[in-house]
Length: 107
Length: 339
Ligand SMILES: Cc1cc2nc3c(=O)[nH]c(=O)nc-3n(C[C@H](O)[C@H](O)[C@H](O)COP(=O)(O)OP(=O)(O)OC[C@H]3O[C@@H](n4cnc5c(N)ncnc54)[C@H](O)[C@@H]3O)c2cc1C
Ligand code: SF4
Ligand code: SF4
Ligand code: SF4
Image (cartoon, rainbow over the protein chains, first blue to last red):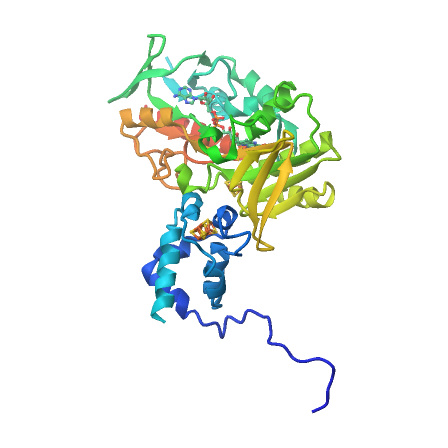
């Protein structure tokens, strides 16, 4: 093949036609409050594992919704529960993360 | 003799309703707990969307009240429903009877000290939207005097859209107020950097989006999409504010000379207490419940009881005035029919 000096990388488009939302659907059964997130970022702003570990529950929920696997981010969570104190939508965030970890364990 | 129409609350809703009732030949009696009329608007400086002085609005309403009976510094001790109207005992011991009753009891501003993590009442650098309006009016606030203000922040949704503060509702006027006040501070301190921390910007009304565009284009105000999680004092007498910059997905902090909290509009508990005495419905958001939210906003579930303004939910000034006029007409028609 001719070398054009560059390679084709995977499209960065969020393609909702092909998104695999099975993880969201599984978590939603256990944590229906998942749907209430309004992406305010309070959980991430108060998170003890944000600065160094890159944890952001807001991103995790967004990733799940868009069909991306948030496993690499979630692994930084220390389950300290600080985020549960601040969520303005009253989501039990720590419990939600715990349920997600249980799903990963079963996988 | 004409029968009394009793108006509870002498904010702009009560004032405008009384003015219109007089024009319709009725006999309004205002019961106002403060020592002056005007309600919250008497605390504001300039009103969106035209930046017109709040005092001009009140000035325009006052002359029309000539002939109305007004009880200032007075509250209602008891309220009873009778067959032919309502009986009130006032805090000064006097009694009043009216065939119709208008609730114009307005709202209560969220007590910002309840969100401890924002440091209101703890740090001198933290004030509320109301404090800022008062400072614009009086120039007096020890927290603001003698300090250079080179970096200023606004926190949207304080005590609104927040289950932890007990109020999941949007107060609807505070995005607009934040942008208005941000511009007003830029006018006074042109070299200051101003940051607005928001979750969603709700600028729904006529000319509101122009304020937003102006804030960006003409004043260089920064908009940061993230809810402030905490505020702490620094050694050099500033406050440092933390949030997630949700658009870049990274934790963010900035130190500021002044932080203005956009306290939200909550139901007025004294109105709820009065409503209970005559079994008026209270809505699940805590405000008085209108008969319906389309054509019956000013109507209650009881004959002869009407609503106007922020007692049924968050309202802007023009909405409040329109409801006051509409309630005055409805009361007039009610009294005609009762004859
Ligand atoms: C920070 C802020 C800025 C705002 N700026 C604007 C703006 O620029 N433009 C705009 O369109 N809108 C603005 N608004 C909205 C505006 O303040 C309201 O629309 C308006 O105050 C509603 O008037 P009201 O008469 O219904 O209620 P209120 O202003 O709350 O008046 C109620 C009156 O009733 C009295 N009262 C209450 N309970 C009792 C009782 N039990 N017995 C006797 N009296 C009682 C109170 O003392 C008060 O005088 C702003 C709101 C906020 C929070
Ligand atoms: S529980 Fe996890 S996500 Fe929540 S604050 Fe603690 S480390 Fe962060
Ligand atoms: S604090 Fe709650 S609503 Fe806000 S982003 Fe986190 S989970 Fe979503
Ligand atoms: S109007 Fe804006 S600041 Fe006020 S509660 Fe609604 S979203 Fe928050």
